Image (cartoon, rainbow, N blue to C red; front, side, top):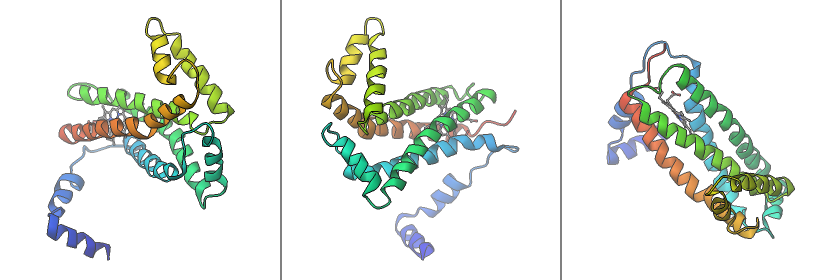
Length: 217
Ligand code: HEM
């Protein structure tokens, strides 16, 4: 059945040769070990986060009056809502672990060196984006923990010399944490951060394709 659909599409778009030669049949160096999987696992977790996030966005309302109840509704009323939310929660936590392990692997194997410096830099930016996903997502349930954690986090940013006060106002949408902050964090979490991440990931993967995976030590 799937094969027939695949060949039906191939007849029209001629994708078979491209997928076989350019996507699947790329040679990799001999002797790779499990530590080379962490980048792929991080990508898999990102896909899980995006797909579960889509489902939650169907119900979520970024308003202080409704956010808490809506998250409660997703968890206890929507069928399989607790699974979707649970997978989102655990994927987010695991992704922080796997991205760290991926970075450590790249560092230990010296894979950041010539000619892969630009890929390391896109990686560092991706790391910052993953942290920003966590920070903005934490506020969305709008419970006490979320409110006070964000209050402390944004206040810390406010202590940065010169730009701190300005950054705090941009983040909170004013001096106080409230409806504008929630709307802003939601927009960052579901629009700005995902789009930037996808663009950087495309760059990351194209560079891996061009330079190949580095050889083991
Ligand atoms: C969303 C985050 C990220 C994803 C999905 C991702 C994905 C991947 C994948 C699938 C690979 C090839 C397989 C492997 O080496 O594991 C790779 C390679 C690489 N990544 Fe990442 N990565 C991410 C973040 C990072 C970070 C934070 C850094 C470093 C600061 C980084 C630097 C590199 C480098 C330099 C390579 C080439 C390694 C080599 O050729 O041996 N990446 N990445």
